[in-house]
Length: 457
Image 1 (cartoon, rainbow, N blue to C red):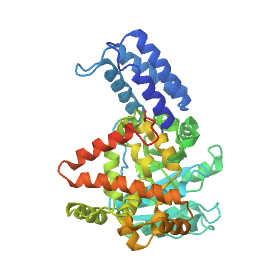
Image 2 (image 1 turned 120 degrees about the vertical axis):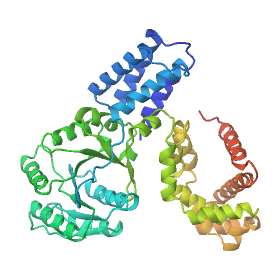
Image 3 (image 1 turned 180 degrees about the vertical axis):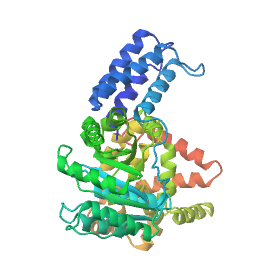
């Protein structure tokens, strides 16, 4: 998310880095480019005007920390305004009510509302240790209730069964009663997708809202619709008292217009981002972290939190013990690392959150596209256990057999073995005194001088 906006803004703001001071001329030129970048990202015009004017007033007003250069000061002002535009402080769920706290899911048809309800249930169960129940009041879409029931089993939460011949408000009332009997902390109530202009459907969800009195009413919207997402949220908010917004399909939105428009237009905070199809692909929305990513400064906190959740600690500890004992990093270990990296969103998912690496995303994606991690794992799986532990025994005939077994070419096997050797060297450096520093120096050198001879920018 935000790739195109990040690239434009970081390129524009870098032009100020060498300026001795900020003045009307260089600020105006930069702000024109910032304005264009935001409009191209499909940010609402009213939001762009307000954002640019606020940055201009602060920059000309010389709100500059003496420890910063003029260029750094301007970037800080832009960062602060991005945070303010997206909602400032933390925008978590407010579930401080007598259990069960009801979360009502609302939105248009086809935006991923049912899947988002399951993602949110998993989020609350795993990260906040809440006992969650799911229920569906969607009596119109075929198999909607069955879909949510299947997802509830997948994310391991309770499910309240309902039928299509019931009234949505009755389902809601019965679900709350059952959640109370089951001592659930949270009841997530899915509703039918609807059009904002459909008065009958909007009246129905208003009745459901009045029936259960939810602690949170979340509007689920497709991030790829850009500023239209904010306009649709506003139309819903005119009928239903929304408490927050969930942007789905944010991983497919390179522009970011929705994230920068929703809060300013509706006054409602974005609370979550849907970042993929998997049930664990839901991120809490932190405006300060998102602003940092947009400006190419990374998001290390989110990366650490993701590692805490997704890295297999037993495998990591096993590898650490192995390295301390001076044992070799073999292809079994390499496969484990590939799997761990895939869980973290792959190379591009990691680079997006590392400071200064955001603009390398597409370059790295292109480099790895020819030999994705999935292919590497298949090649390793086609080896015998002996070959995985002792890769030096892999001769020409063995490479041919491995290539045939994995549906790849011999050059793909050679490439994998070469990458393993490089990783082995890095691991060896890490196991020595000052290893992490040595490894990072080596990695920095590799980034500056890749095999193709092309420098990363």
